[in-house]
Image 1: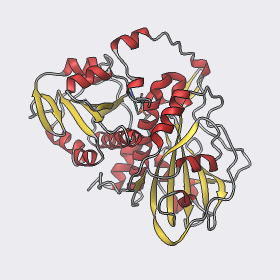
Image 2: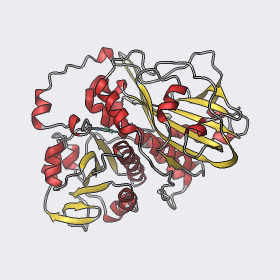
Image 3: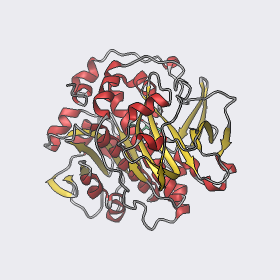
Length: 418
Ligand SMILES: Cc1cc2nc3c(=O)[nH]c(=O)nc-3n(C[C@H](O)[C@H](O)[C@H](O)COP(=O)(O)O)c2cc1C
């Protein structure tokens, strides 16, 4: 069996030995487009979908000689966005019941298939039809493996987790609930959605309520449209996905993660969220830090994720290394965290650098996706406190493990500060 995590470790040596040259002209496109003659619905035309575009809409545009560059409500390693989003709507005012593809660039939903008694619920352990909105997140690995090669395996799951977090936050603004459901027949749905190569489902979220009748199988396969304009298959990622895709899990509702935050304030935070590019090295208050991390350790632990962190610049706290809010070792670990983050200054100039870890190889996809999800909540809480935040996907794996004194796999780092 392939150790899919260790196979993509970075080390001081491996990073220096890599002779891979990236040709930016060959970057695959980051948006999937269904044919122009498919019916499209503009999200802003439907009051029932107010604020839905916060799930992944464009929040920043920049013109370069090579073309336009778009950033979204969702962060992504290298801004490569290796994911697509599909929605099933049932009983939403003014819209046909059906399966739709979300197009962030146009803020539209493209109708792929009208449903009646059939539906995606058929491919879940509980096949009862649901009324409301169902979200399906897929990974489009080549957008990321084009640059990051095999290590993209990690980024697709983390980015998919951020995408789930963005959906959760948008639904909070919409006053709707979220149930995360990671256990469904992804292989069957990959086939139904016509994914021939390079795209595969990873996660789902229900914002809907169960009805009496069961959904029937979707009678036909949806037409294949490639999510990137070209594709270099990556056998390692395909194999690693297959190996980690089947696991049993119970759907769960996350705790209320934006408790007492006025909806308008959360909406602003979602729209204004960005990854910080450099910290000024200022301190943050203990209250802000407590606000940013509250309830997250418990949530993470209940899904087999341990969060370690080094505190560098948080007022009225002891500098040192912590695990799940417990001080393990007092000391100044700024330089250590900078080094471990592949010598990126973000890791050491932060107020705190968090390390998401898990020993759960059986639910590797889940642990990675949920790390991205929790990191997304932290991003938005930082934004609410006018504190900067950045994901760090590039770090020295084995050295980080030995610094944290853990056998857990290190899934993700996150730097927060000013
Ligand atoms: C999984 C993940 C890994 C990332 N890794 C790094 C990193 O190692 N270094 C860095 O400077 N930024 C990193 N980022 C931040 C991205 O570069 C950033 O999200 C992207 O450029 C889009 O910009 P935005 O977040 O401001 O929308 C990471 C983001 C994610 C989601």
